[in-house]
Length: 372
Image 1 (cartoon, rainbow, N blue to C red):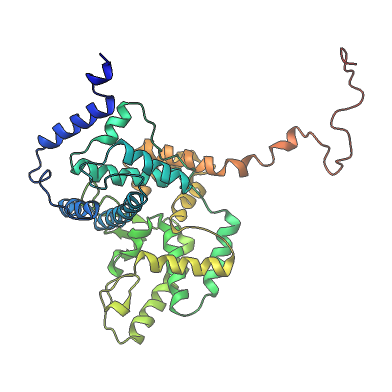
Image 2 (image 1 turned 180 degrees about the horizontal axis):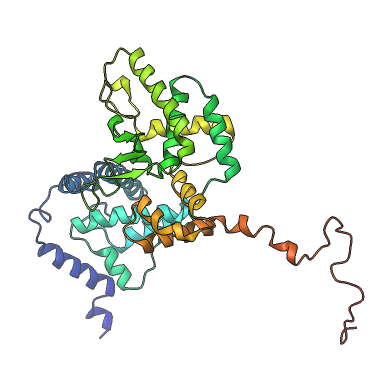
């Protein structure tokens, strides 16, 4: 008798295991959910609803955006006949394999591929589908987040940025001055400054209260950081004067935000996209490419370089969970700058004579014994 007639295949056994886990699911209603014509989208709704109040609003928004997109991708793969199911409860090895092939075909960055799989895994786990875990046990290697060096802004570029914002006009110019000065003076994260209240900034004490830190509502609490670059004070003071004039010109008695979006009323805040637009306006005028989050490592490296004894104090300023985190953070910054630090090392052992590339690479006086 043929063994294949009596012994189930590995994939069939794996499918049986998943069905058993689903049948014994401890989450009521998962198995019996009616998901309709577009099961991935419907399951996403249930999944997101279950996460409300347990994650930050920004995380919720990101989960929703990515999962809606992945749902459309899987629907297209099904329409093309490449996969059989888009139901997160029954997605199997074939669907995952075709999804991996799609990501490679799209030439997605490994970091993006890993993020997509992370979002997909969360939904599948909610639906008691452990296909990704099963495939890992089988030895499948999934894309992983590569450790990218942290970017810093070179001093010359930093000076160019500040010279540029000093010349920018209107309220856009005022915001640009305030943003870059405060980001560089404090090393706070982009969201932490964007959502700051006017009362959170105390120039007399040179402090900024961080009302909405990373990990808010989970593992982080509000705290206060110092403005450690006094050379930024004149630019910050200029911004505050211009902010007051802007608020008065709009006939608003008082605005809540440090960077008030008065089109949304006295309590309005700007979106991350608007802060990004201001940043792009700066880039367009100074021809320097940067990210708002680059001011954080730039401040760190300029503060610590040449005096590593400052690293513990910088760890407190950055609000890292441990000193070892700051050490790793600083090391990654140094990786990003390694090329710049080593670019003159060739002078110690040149291969071609400087300013005279016609000279022989190796002195003719050398005797190559043993060679014809």
